[in-house]
Image (cartoon, rainbow, N blue to C red):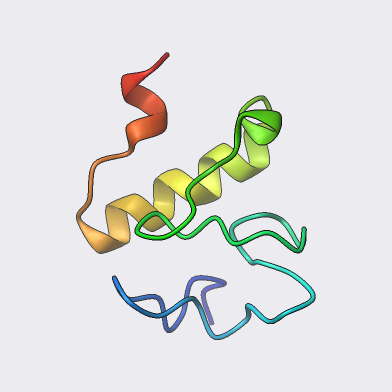
Length: 69
């Protein structure tokens, strides 16, 4: 099962919970593309950037992180 399973424009992946976000590599901060996004402090983390890009692609939304690079 994909780690992004259950992801919709409204709902987080089923693997997310109050203790950690799947997109955030387990950090307790929501990085859903249509909710919180990736905070500046995590923009240099290649793993988070890849998962975030995959989430954006799965949802069909723009990856705003790429627009600021």
